[in-house]
Amino acid sequence: MEISLLSFPSSQTLTLRPNPNPLFHFTSSSKSSKPSSLHIRAAISRTKKEETVATVKTNLENCHLLAAIKYEGFTVKQFQELRRSLPENTKLLVAKNTLVYKAIEGTQWEALKPCMKGMNAWLFVHTEEIPAAIKPYRDFQKEKKLEENDFTGAVFEGKFYAPGDFKALENMPTRAEIYAKLLGALQSPAIGLVGTLQAPARDVVMVLKAYVKKLEEESGQ
Image 1 (cartoon, rainbow, N blue to C red):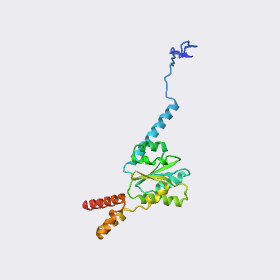
Image 2: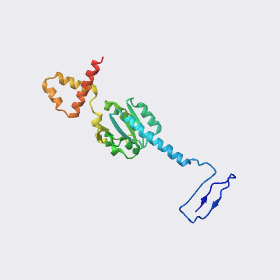
Image 3: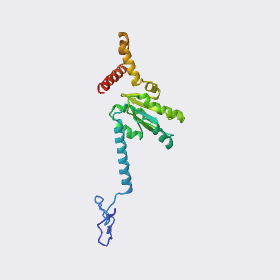
Image 4: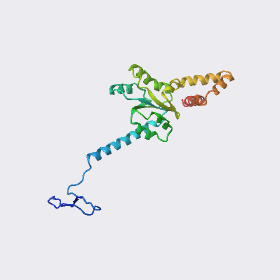
């Protein structure tokens, strides 16, 4: 075992070997120690990971739908074009599955766990108009012939939607259609209102929320 002792002013190092007692090992140098490039790279990598997790969490605020898109095969140019084609109320982010899962773990978005494989781009939708938010990607996908780069899944209202379930999301009624449905039910005979109330609970809640919001907006004018 090598023992290095503090050097004299001449910067020479006195070295004794071997040391019969392996319990003691002293290393000293006249030069100040500096962090290695390996440590610097590790610190930078850790900081970037933390920033990515924080970015995901920020985009989850006021998010109505989070969807994963198969990213493998995209060119940089295609990705830039896609970002420009999306409405302002959506955000597209490329991040590792492990970092995204770290951000969503313990939340309603954890239902997105089945998508945590392969390379994904993550679409954050910050509007209740889900079909309108999804359509730009569908149009881009068709235009660029990116059939393989489909949605790998999404979470809406805490429920996971597999690729085969996306029709339900894409065919959801718009806010205008909800207004028309509610107003029509209120103006129709009682049987019409009963029919509306017999719809699935989620649809009824959406209808009532939309109507209340409309009244609040009108009263605030």
